[in-house]
Length: 55
Image 1 (cartoon, rainbow, N blue to C red):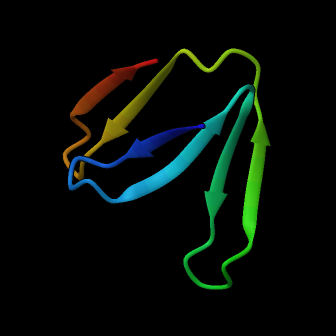
Image 2: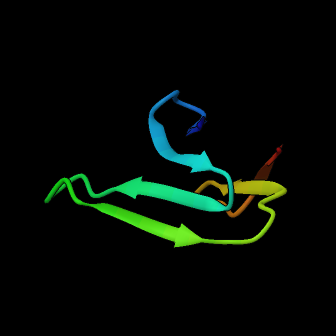
């Protein structure tokens, strides 16, 4: 399982195979997004400038 972290080092999600796992900060339930071959994650700030993380 691979952690996906924000620039501030806060955990955003976890990657496990073809699944992206996100925990709701309010109700603590997990949201699982099934995606084939996640290759790249793009972060945007409020100015819409991007930072790319290749997997």
